[in-house]
Amino acid sequence: MAFEYPGDGSLDYYPCRYGTSRLVFRGPRRDLERPYVVTLGGTETYGKFVPEPFPALIEAACGLRMVNLGCINAGIDVYLRDPDILAVAARAQVAVVQIMGAQNLTNRYYSVHPRRNDRFLHATPMLQSIFREVDFTEFNFTRHMLQTLQSVSVDKFEVLAEELRATWVGRMRTLLEALPCKTVLLWVGRQPPPSPGRRADLTHDPLLVDAEMVAALRSRATSYLEVIASAAAQARGTDGMAFAPLDAPAAQGLPGPALHREVADALGPEVQRLF
Image (cartoon, rainbow, N blue to C red; front, side, top):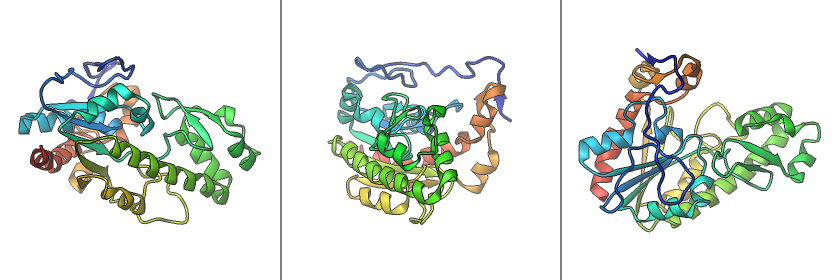
């Protein structure tokens, strides 16, 4: 069963920082003087509501020093805009880069918060000219904005979606090139990367990322790994997760301990091999 708590802090994430970065990561803080592996990614890598996320499971099983640099709701911009954290990642023996969605990054059509990438800041004149009927001051989050724009016009939305896809590929290439260490490109989801389609699917994560985009990056990484949630892991739902009652809807959309275990079982041997 899920562990539900009445307070705001269901789990102690031992929040910590590295260097002079303003980003807060899940701790305990790791010693960076000895060889280590970093994991970069979003909420899944951070392990929100999960007592032992996959980096911690790998550390326990393989004895490797795992530095969890996952950020809640992160996009690629979190890392590219933070030289301190990028330096920490570059000094690792191995860097695991989770494939994150394409919605949470600044592009020619809109800007996002530099640290909280899911926060929509403002639309550029280009996007306002395409969707003249939309009041962009109503949006606080990127996903809500994209869903609304698609409902207004599927055809006009595809112009924006193509921009996001192209920008995502370019930023991911930049991130991988900034990591001189060995890298593992990691896909975690309920299904494999989908084939490119004529209509963007905003119901599955990583949002707007398809097989063609992933293929464009695979040669840039040392290895590529797909972990698709098993039927058994999906059936477990929020079993073993720790959250307050008000967080139940959010918890239902995130990987639970069963999937984190599957990720650790698949990723651990690969990281150990590269290390």
